[in-house]
Structures are given as structure tokens and as C-alpha cells.
Image (cartoon, rainbow, N blue to C red; front, side, top):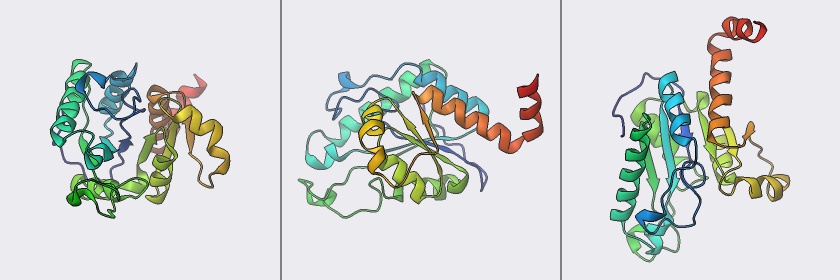
Length: 213
């Protein structure tokens, strides 16, 4: 399910890419049957929910612009995502989609938008609407476009090695000037790093005590 809860100004959030980070990377999800959560994703998001960090999905979906599938399918996929997460006791607090592409078939999608990652429009919209602080937040994804987007927003970034992540790490990282703050095997590893970092930032003495006991 999607939460409508509003958060105080200055609160950090975790921004998640969708394909390859939350669900299996299968190219364009042009049918509902092609959407499958990656192992452990529900548990990872539930950990963020329980820790009190808002979870925001930010995703480029140019398949709409290219005419590969209608917006109605996109809505059905996200309803399925919410349902599967709910079955595991998890939810996302916001969902922001860029359906645009410069070569879109339909003119209404054929714009030079500010929301297509690595541009930061989706993050900025979420921060304004949900009263979040991007500089205290995290961006997690399997593509370097996610890393560049997060860095441009001055957020911390995590590359996951699911989806395109392993290939990007092996063959793209060396050519990129921007590097992630952390590399994790999957979303579970990313969440563990984020929560551990937040504990140190907010309760440094307690975190130190736990490490030494």
C-alpha cells in the first residue's frame, strides 16, 4: 500500500529505483505477469518502515512514451507492487514516475523534462510534497543514472548489484567521475548500510556501545 503520511521538514528519506532494484530487471515490464519482486525486497522495505525512514520510489518509465504499453498497465503494475509489499508487511510512502522521452510517439510525452533521471525533478517534487531533506536522504539504484541523480541532489548514494548493477559496477564505474557512497549486493545490504549509518548519525554513543559489546 502507499502511505499518505506527511513528514517533518528536514527528515531524510530513502529513494528507490524500481526495475532492477525492487523487481527483476526484465527490460520493459509490458505485461503484468513480468513484474516480480526481487528476493528480500519486502523485508528490506519493511525494515525502513519500522525504522521510520520514508520510502519513495522514483522511476523512469519511457515505455509509456515509446508506446510499448499504456499508462493503465503502469498503474496496474504499481498496484501489484503495493499488494506484494503489503503481503510482507511493507509499504512505500510515495511513488514518482517520469513517463517522458525525447523520441516519444505521443507529443504530450515528447518533452525535455526535468524529471527523467539522472535529472533531479522527481526527487525535488517528492521533497517538496512530503517535506523531506534531500541532503540527508539516500538514493538506491542499479544504474549509474541513479547515482548521478542522487549526487546531483546532494544525497548519499548506493549502487545495488542486482539488475544492471553488477555490469555497471564492472564496466561503467571506471569511466564515471561520480562514484556511489556504498555498493551493496542487493536492497537488503543497502538498507542495512543505511540504517547503520543513521544510527551512528543520530545515536553515535549508542552505536559505539553496541559495536563494543
